[in-house]
Length: 401
Image (cartoon, rainbow, N blue to C red; front, side, top):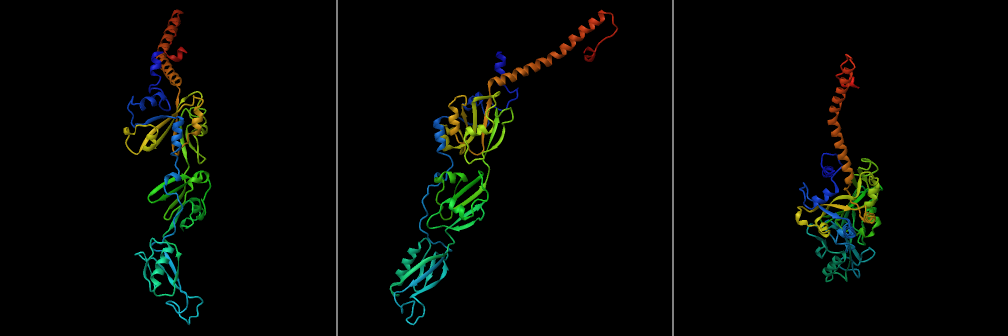
């Protein structure tokens, strides 16, 4: 029995993965591993900490305020109209037949120097200014020559303050940013909306070299994610199923629960994932050793109490352990949110490995005993036959049978 218990976890018997005690011992440095990892037991504090780091656009971008007033950029087409208080001024004559004392300057683009040209005002700075600021500058340059001039400056064609919406939308393109402010869903709606409806749609927002992605459902069900878009933002809509892998003692049989599963929802808890894999195998699984494999950033790992000095790189391999033998463990699993590409592994119970080893010993002993049994039975039969005076000599196993 001591030999059996000692060899129960050895590598000579087949298994679907490591024993729970092996995961625990190797995480504590008991044995060398090819990739170091940290073992974190799932507790209410761990679930609460991870909930603060769920991918959200509301936390990924610091600037969530509405866009500021429109400002001209190089290439924008500008319209300028100049009004005077009475006829006979700088731009109008007393004999003019045009109704109103105004003149419209031909539309022009902001040049590479950021300026526009206005008659009798010369070069006027437009880049980085609002229409109101350009108006005031023109009035200031004309008031000494024109009759109480008033100026109206507007955008004839917006070519710089644009928002790009790409990917799986019905009408991809670049759209002028609205001065009143638009949110991400508004911009996607202007592009015709997603080309397909489902749980597999993702939305990526790129702004000033920073990029973040969330499921499309996160914009709908969590309004805080539906932040304002700003000029030059790029929105990319794409389809990518969220999946997780289940291995080990999962499902009703040894292999029925193992495989690749889709979320089929924009959010999935660990308890729901265990249900999708068919639960735990009642004849194999140890409910106290349910593990979830995931890579976390150094910031998250540090918040979880992991000593990050032992690891190299920005991503820390972490194995989460939830004890489903504890009745309250299912509450933790219900609040533990799955992430795309997670791996759930359920270890076999120690008794299963012991049973496998006993069967292995029984096979070895039976194999070694078969030749002895054949030889003994043949000798007994031969002596019996010779004792009766028979001339038949049985020498093969078939004759013995």
